[in-house]
Figure 1 (cartoon, rainbow, N blue to C red):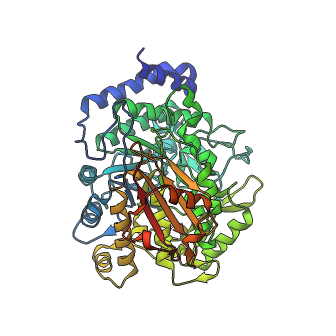
Figure 2: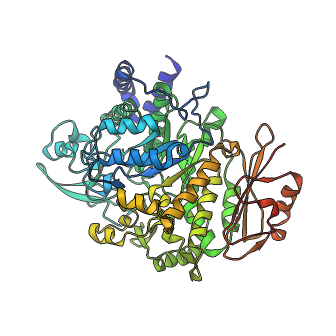
Figure 3: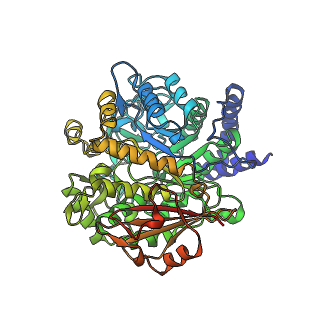
Length: 589
């Protein structure tokens, strides 16, 4: 049996025991069909692979996150408007785009999928998706934990018809499910009227998002087929949405179960075999140690990591909020110093904001509860909200902050101040400096304000950060020098231009957070094989920071090399860092 088939059989045996051989036979049919029908998209500059079929990334990899209709106009489908916007305003500054679920949906702005193989006609069609994939590395969501109750699969369940009849998880409502980890405060079990009477089905996120039963191998095979279909349409990055909750076993927390990790490993093995260079990224908004478990680093002694190629740096956004609103970098520096050294097959997706809120669960073990609560209260003062989740004892605790990143940078614990844009740009420069691939949410790029009217219309707190821009209105703001939108967008564009030309920002370049006074964050990237290195300095306070007060570690690094400024500022002649100033400096061997 070839190595790939041996690997698949091992994973399927873990999942399905004696049924593994039959499941593997059917999975092989999916793969054979894919190989005979695939018209591989032409390779782009950013989609090369290394000789050992590991994914290749570089300092040029910089991504944007957007809904298909984040920018709309009357004369073109939203997907075409998005493509034109990215090409005109960002061009080669970015290499990839994550288009959030673009399928027919019934709730949660796309994450309650009705049909996985269709494009929502209100956005466009598959030609528009393929056009985006021709210009950029395209990320698509594989929403595999749950499905809309309006889907045909769920209609099958209601009527007792195949295939969907056995796709869902029925639980006696008297069952003790208190051990189950909850990301929401809604009931876990939802009553459903079927032809067999009232049944209660598992619904982790909402009563409209019904969890799928992966103990049924038919469900797994459905999603393998969907995954291969996405690859046929030109997707290069597959995001496994809410994957941590995938496998359920009563009497456990039903999060991060071994079978869940095995499913991720199986999907990784499939894409590595049939479409080398495709990236698997897991979306797991959980405490940091749990999050990075999806690399599979504990198995590295037996070979390369075999789970996700990438994980989101979920701890970064709330730690940055804490750092820049409190004016101390020690907590962030300590966390950065604790990050494991990653093999070349793995990297992080760094971000500050996304379509969701700013998760606070990743702060567990990193920030005391009283410091977290001070941060939550501050975000309330800046116009934000806090979403809650249920605990086994029936209590609720904070789950995420709902606010736009620009508004979150309105001030410090002392209140609003004149430094909002400088503080905002400092936060983005820190994110762009860190090891990994950076992703900027469309509303971060445009410095969008809180959409309170959107919250009132939808009744959902997350709508605060999901505004739909009218194309002409956005264009006017971008071209008017007197607007924050103009200032933010063009400053970020300059940072992206600089970053993509600097090899020290390669995701595989080493990273070291230097010990410094609390007011300063210092990060060294490199050295590269040719000895080149980069030093990044960030004043995280609203006061002037003399360069004579940067700490012994930074003084030693500065004295060892001949540094020159990468950014436009003439850093060599500066004697102090202004509030929220950023300095990127490079040195040759």
